[in-house]
Length: 439
Image (cartoon, rainbow, N blue to C red; front, side, top):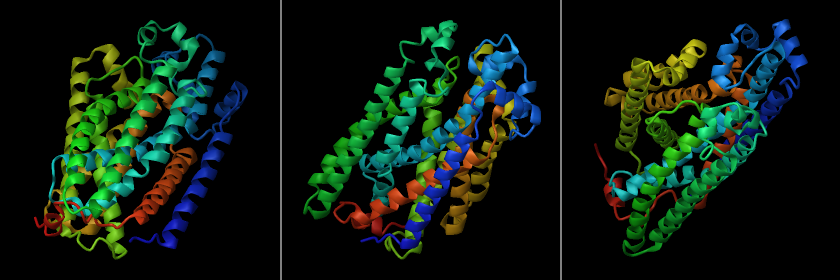
């Protein structure tokens, strides 16, 4: 049985406390009215937000769907953007760690449904990571509910004043409405958590079984879950991410989000596995298992890049105004993170992980994994911030604090869950093959 080290537990709690204090500071530091915005922009001590005052009104219309006719409404628009910043930072970090847990759940289901022989020694690591689905899902539901019911200004389609003057959003209101988005979120998260709980229960029963009865049930349920997952993941990506830009859509978006999700999931499995190995656990996990995880990190990084390039190139080459505006905004105002994430998510992993021998070197895999997860945080940042914060974006206390808080929560939940059962799924029919796995 795994025992949570007191130092790791204390470290996770410290991260949560520091992150929570930073999040509160971020909310308290936002302006509360347009007068404060004017003072902030005039003083030039606004964390880089002064550039917003110099941008044209048409750009503001493009990024937020508002008609700005005078200075007062312009400053109100900037006020909303500045107030959105801590909410956006919280949303991005919350989604990142929830996305990792959900991706691990899908990867776990794939291993069972495909009857993979190499991975059963890693099943308890995957089950531990998926434990974050429950607290992470609750937090996401709260954030989505607050945003959908216009407690903040994240979703422009939730603002009745904007919708009243926007024919395009009105045409999508049958889908993009507060109750519709929230009910779908409840169904999706409920389905994902239900599969996680059922598969966990069957996995525990299989430990005590003398035959493969429970594994066969898990196989059937996993196969059915994957059908449910691929549909709900696509719709989730539309509701939770693409709807920040309700004038724009991409038929590749669901796959694009999935690619980022699955590479972060495999990376996290590798990182947690190596942490446990360093603590003296998982004696049956060898270099070949790490090598295979690193291969998935490498392969899915290329898959993500393929989808990124396909989406970007096809839209850019077609040059249809209502489609290309999504990328114009990001290239003009988010050039560094927009192109930087390609370096982090493709160029760096492919240079480091292309060599087969490097995939067996733990510190190489750890270094690559950290860069990949940072890169996909930047990817989410570029998905969310242009529509919610616009040119008022900046990386500072709200962004860093949100990541630190959710990292601490993630570590605490995952490693606590690992103490609930033996780290070896001893009843799995492919366990012997997994123990003797060699590439």
